[in-house]
Image (cartoon, rainbow, N blue to C red; front, side):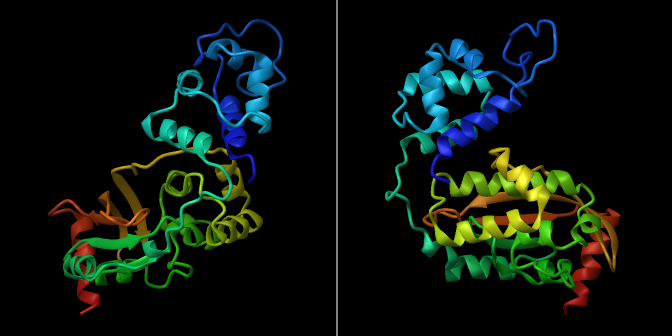
Length: 271
């Protein structure tokens, strides 16, 4: 993980099609997925040698103009561009430590516990579930590894039945941690989790190596609960002020729907 900027650039280059970049495909088969290095260099207005040095980690101080040009070539959104800047500006030994992100303030804890007829829980940047309300506990009851959303998704085979749109859910969670962690991959707790999941799950390894960055979740989630059946929930996520990486997730059903009734039955089961 010493060359995070280069890994990110390479992943984005391989994921960008010639059509997306506005180039003609030409004839014959392309041996390189996505764009070639010389095509990226041309579109970004830099030399091929300079771009190669960026990917290889031999050039670590690209200008804002170069970063903006590369973001345009790869079609990066706001969050991914911010991530690119963070990788470019970070050096080993200057990583932020955010152990405070594992401590939930009493006021947030009261908010979560008092949230009724909805799922409410707080995670840190590793997606450890730090606190949860009774409805969330009932929702995740019986699922192993539910103390960490990434372990639940990739290490528990039952998650593929629980998340009806498993691939979408899995990609969001991996991209969310990429965005939350940023360049601070020297944190031993993050390294341990990434290595554990990479060894145990080919799907996680594939998604992690794609370097996708996505902060916003899909607004609608579809689930299958072993006791109450299928649920469709609307959810949102909120940053918690003063605690980097800590976020509050809330999910609820549309009033009067079968999903609303299912949540009510789950809530009653915890009483």
